[in-house]
Length: 310
Image (cartoon, rainbow, N blue to C red; front, side, top):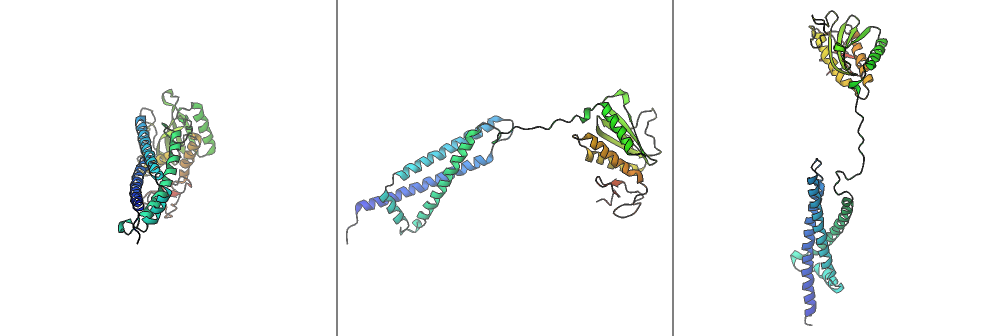
């Protein structure tokens, strides 16, 4: 039997030591890369304090520096292997009789593939972040703000013309405008719907702010002659309609299209011209709890009782 070659034994031990160091370096690279992903995933602060954004970028750049430094160490370590040493390592790692070394070769292969992906992603991320250092967004775009609505400061003539058009739409509904104290913005609109109800609507410009509905025989004026804009009806049916009308006011509100909002609300209010003759679409009854259908669907204007609309 020939004597073992001391040089071959030395090379084998050195290869095992280098492979162990390389595996540890790859493990360290994996931990550093995970920290980079966690820091990058946290993102910018998103508030007005730019110092936090600057600190975040500094931390991310420092972690990229650590990753690059570890990559260079691994490249230097792999460059020290000779062709013969590599052959010996590949041939001997998988046949090492030690139980703890059985998976060493497969682990090294997996780490190598993972290292290539990390290197590719790190290069791409570094190039992308380098283009937008201290900007609050990764994309360059110009924000387009919607033009501010001026319906609340519209000229008095606009409301007068619109009310005149509404009077032409409905023959059985009379709408009048008054401006207490000669106000140029605030207006009080009184609506008389046939012989069923009266309504006081408070306008600011072309925007409806408050609605009060009362019975036909109830007064809309106080004893001193001023319009009663806060007093509610003494009849429960018109109290319910007042609540529903204010909900409709909010539903139809559209600062971008104020004239359409007012016409839609007036059409909704006109749907009560058959308040005491309509049947509920759900129960097909005139009365429920001694009240007629006081709810109107905003789109179809179909009548419902308060308890039937759910």
